[in-house]
Image (tube, rainbow, N blue to C red; front, side):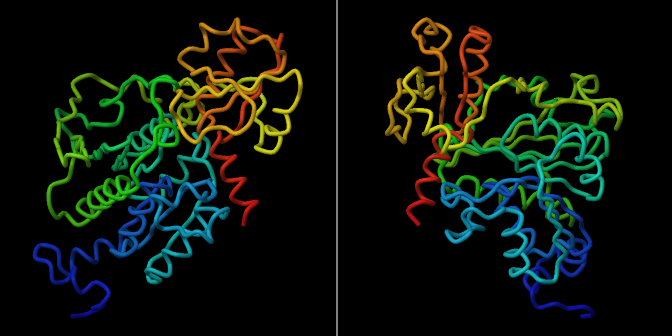
Length: 373
């Protein structure tokens, strides 16, 4: 066989796949946005399968708490940029493919140019603002989007913006027309996730990419697969596109680049100081400072410094208890504490200094680990 490569021998042997299917993979261009829990298995399996051009978008560093589920990384990689480590290890896995990394946060200003270079987009992100941004860009650029999400013990997979149904495609906004508020949905930093779940859902996403490229099997086009890993209960539902989502999506590139998806998802820029772990700990010792844990009562790890606990859900009704002028807020990842800061800012205005711990108590744990090594 001409151009035979033993690396892909098991693909060649597959009926309805064979040499032609492998050639399609080698010629494909796939962009994976997010190199975390979902992104790691997606990247590993697409690289191993021989996707010719594989793009990676991520702006985070590897932390020790990532390693429980992000198996592309090892302990020695803690502190390094995910795109750097992922690119290196994927090239070791398959040096015959082209890997392009984008060490940046995807925004409405840069998403168009990046996404337009690829044929298939894989959403492995963990926040709603970026999901809506990716979806809107894919709709405008007519790019198939492979969606994945996880929550505790359950995951979802869907394929958007592919084939026409009733003269319309199905996109993420048909599933979730209106973004939830920041305090309505928690991510795995707040509620946890069993380490194997993103691996299972990420492999399903990679499977949808391979099926879409090669034409093998039936793609989850306009359908949402929900998988519960505790019971193995799986169900697939059709996503209706009868309600128009066109008016929810920017009209063109100019409108897209002017759209603030963070604002639309209720993530506001406020005059609130983001404290590093070092500055936060130092300020907890100040006499006129009140430090508040806005997590729920039973969340771990427990803080080992002086503080009180007022869950975010109770904060509005308990603001009268906050008598000191300097208020420090913290939670698990920094998202709920930022929301709490907004509540206090709205109530107190400039009467009090309000700060929060950037990265949450997770950042304190990482700081301790770094100091002990």
